Length: 153
View 1 (tube, rainbow, N blue to C red):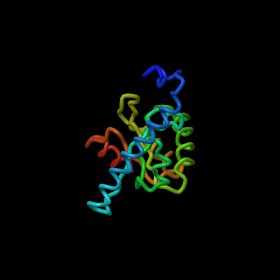
View 2: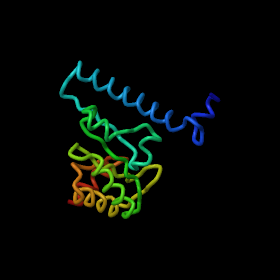
View 3: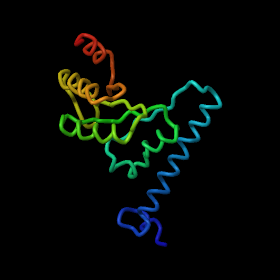
View 4: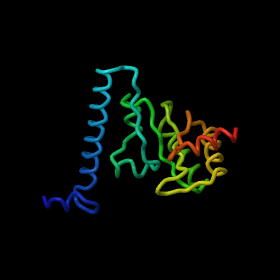
C-alpha cells in the first residue's frame, strides 16, 4: 500500500477509505447519542448537514442513515444558495432522503455562500414550508433578522 496516495481521490482504496471514514463519523454520532441518553433522554441531538446527496460520503455525513438508526432527532440541511431553482432541487432530494424523519430547512441569509435580501429570505422560508419541511432555520440569525421576519408576518 502506498500511504496516503492510495486513499486520496483517484487512489486504489479511495472509495473504501471514504466508507470507512464515514463509518467512523457515524460511530462518533452514536457515541454522542449514547452519552446524551445516559444523561437526559429528552435532549434531542441534531446536526447541520451538507445539502447535496453527492457530498454525503465526501464529508462523512451519512445523515439519512443517522436518522434511520435513531441517532438524531432531526437534521438541518444547509441550503445556502441564492438560486431558487437550486434550492428546490436540493430540497426535493433532501425530503426524499429524510423520509418520515424530522428535517428542517437551513436557509443561509448571510453565509460564506450567500447574502439574501429580506425578500429572498422570506421567499425561501415560504418555499420550505410549501415543500413540506418540518420547519426552517435561518443562518446567520441575529436580532435584525428576527425583527425583519416578525414584521413581515
